[in-house]
Length: 272
Length: 313
Image 1 (cartoon, rainbow over the protein chains, first blue to last red):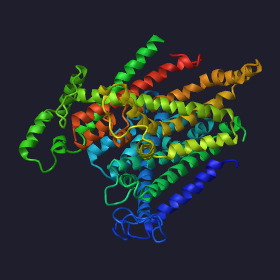
Image 2 (image 1 turned 30 degrees about the horizontal axis):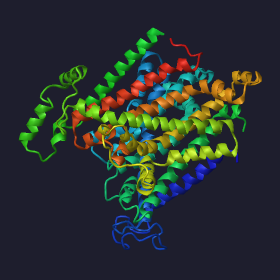
Image 3 (image 1 turned 180 degrees about the vertical axis):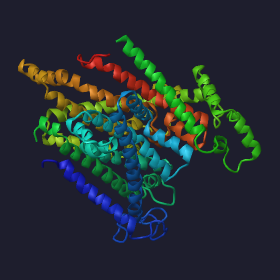
Image 4 (image 1 turned 60 degrees about the vertical axis):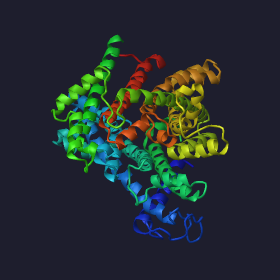
């Protein structure tokens, strides 16, 4: 197997994202409706993941929670990725004191621990999806910013950029059309692993009660609720946990595999 | 060399100032009214006016910021609105729990990272390497609140070998340390997995260097080549990431501390946010960011010890 991570990651992502898409459109039962079956029914044909202490169908709740978590993580990561890349690119292209200053602002964000950043936003904006999306965006921003800055600093002096400038291309065109495609690989790899970490962060924040609010299901809060009744009904915890781990693992493996595929230096040093 | 240290320390102070300003502005200026945030919408006008005065909101924000900053320089971080105690004392008590927890978690994650990373790099491309790195991927994907819960079930409720769920305080002496073992382990697994991947990757790079080939051709034992010639320069990226990991641990493990009911910085952070205790939130944020910056500074200063080619300018 030449790149097992890439294939395994792609398969896991296809399954979990597929399940999330399905959950956004259809669930076997209403995920919010109590007593579709007796409380704490163990897994059965009608309820493959069992039911929770309200008698709600766990499979339906997992399916309904997956697109919410994925959406929050993806929008947050995309936001952080876009703003971080733009700031990093500007700082790399401009150079000089202004570029240095912009780079420092990016680094400043790294000295906030992710969950604390989210807590601060929740204090200011109140709990809920919007705060979590912003928090995920903010703590991912510096990673993209540093990557983009390094790439743009390296590429801006290259001959093909000089040639484009000589042809009269403006700075925005140079950044978007000439440099960005050459810097996109590492940014894409960062994006997949950022997404995986964002999924875990979203679950953690929901676990603390700061993310998606009840009664809407989220994997983090389902795990929190299931902990009290774990001995009685382990399935209420095992299945949401597996869904979360499979999604995170999928994106991490995909990022790893993409990284190995895109980094020619790594391949040259280590052969295969 | 001396001027490099001075510049870095000056930079540390400037960054901390910038962070204090950012936190202060976010909590005091951006949207809405902090006093309203503290008392809630239904509060009586009386209470509202009192809290407003207590927060000093009748003055413009630059004055309030400088006043706050002046207090910090004198060691006075203000009073918590919720606990009715000095913020400094609350932070001190929390750090007394979070610091040993962070240290223990960091040591455990190094104990995971180095053997795994070195072994995987040594047997690069083998099925052992694949198995170890697969294990690391799983370790990275498991949420720490879930891992912590499983550890409690296994070691505390099941085997009854380690206590969990509260903290007796340091008045109980060294045995109190036992209450930190399970939370530290829950924190150490994902961080150890992350650092193990780092150790392996960095070691694979240095193993391809000429000086490693020279060491081998001199006939040095493989263990010496691996652990001395290849590992030492390979530590630089590991120290950078390890510094970030340790700094963030010192800043307080919000999720795990809440899971285990440990009265550390993370619990204080959550409690202060839920109580909208602005002076306390500011204090927690400042200590958290300060710890991260300080550890990063130490990590930067250590590079010269690890790789003789590094020169400070």
